Image (cartoon, rainbow, N blue to C red; front, top):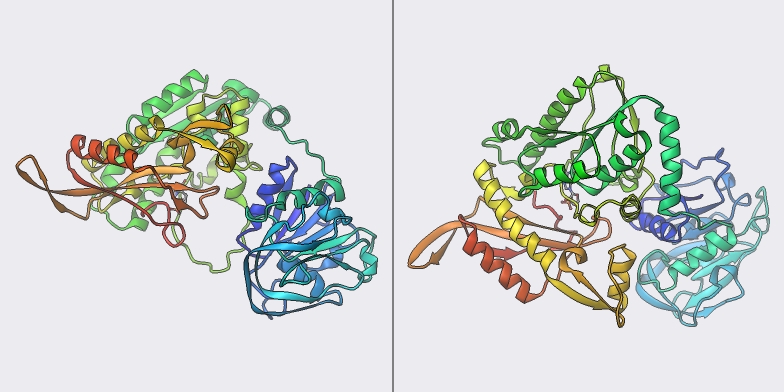
Length: 543
Ligand code: XMP
């Protein structure tokens, strides 16, 4: 595996994603947690950082842990750090170098740039520049304004007193971002050719080895799993079911704020999949505890607390359980360097279980990204509508009702949301070129005919839903009657990881149809708006 050391840059996760797209295995670790005793590490990537290498508080890593012993690639800050500490120099750039640039000279003999096209476009984003490259290395790529855009040193002992002869290299640009057109090629050159990485990840392999490991780990014990109806917990359940069959008991709590008919439909899906599921309708308790509460954080806290209470009461009935399984996936776990330390929203999933239950944690998807979870789900034969489900927040529609929550408001929102979501599923669009490739790469099953694919708007967006602005009323007219009711805001976003998102540019004819249908059919709503804010500065959910 490849270790990616994190120095706090927002693009670190993207490096991991690109490597996973190459079907190679990698792990992101904080810059000061290099696993020195891990024999499976075959290469190291030092990622970007918001700091300058010469800042007193900059994150510093002890390069002797791996330089020379393993091939090392520095990206942006990583490249600068290696340079700064090995006879090179880094200084503030005259102006911030940001955006698209072309590599005007490339040394294609260099293993890192094998297969590159002339003038290949790269993405720069840095305030510092490498004014002198490390001792023993040579410049292997430049742009018009950045002389030292990439350097390569074939043997670390040329650079300093390192223990081993492996190569060291650095790039000032960001190969991991989409706008670096041959960035994946560069990462492939590093991981596969230079480090000798095997491209052997496949969903079937993953299922086979994970099922075997789960059988060994769990033996004859009983396992409890909290299901949410979402992709991750559902795939985890089906995977565990394959490994240990009826030793698995799943618990699905209905807090009353799921989508329209979702609880019964998902229970039915689970039955067909052969899962042993206890469905708990606890909506009355949640509604009672939420009555009159308007503060978003307060709502989240109450729902989190009630959820744990209800889940635990059920879990305790399974007296011989030894394991708690969760659908945790890799992005949930990455030990990110939290530089600002501020809580924006407290996300709640399954909270802590009482200690006296003595359960051990089992997380069969903990190394996977979302699209890999979907690939595993498909290989397990799960129905497509379960696999392509949009993410949905744990507190459900509660964080999509501004103001206090009542069963009636939830019903109004469920109806509006249902019209929107069904509309997205029914509206098909034709895509070609890059757009089509992007959708196919995400695993959406669509046939390419004459260079085009047909997909639904639902599959084209990352997430969508309706928001009830219950704190707002506006005047309308229906027939001859004056109305004074709440607006509904529709939200649909495109994203790859929910960290950043853009509002989806939905077709006007689609929006017109949905708007008319909501206002005509949903009593209590007389106005429909579309949210055109990106994240940041907005967030995906309104609360
Ligand atoms: P925000 O609103 O923070 O949402 O931009 C990012 C992603 O997280 C989902 N979300 C949640 N998921 N529990 C969850 O499991 C929560 O409390 C929660 N709040 C937001 C949101 O739907 C989006 O996909």
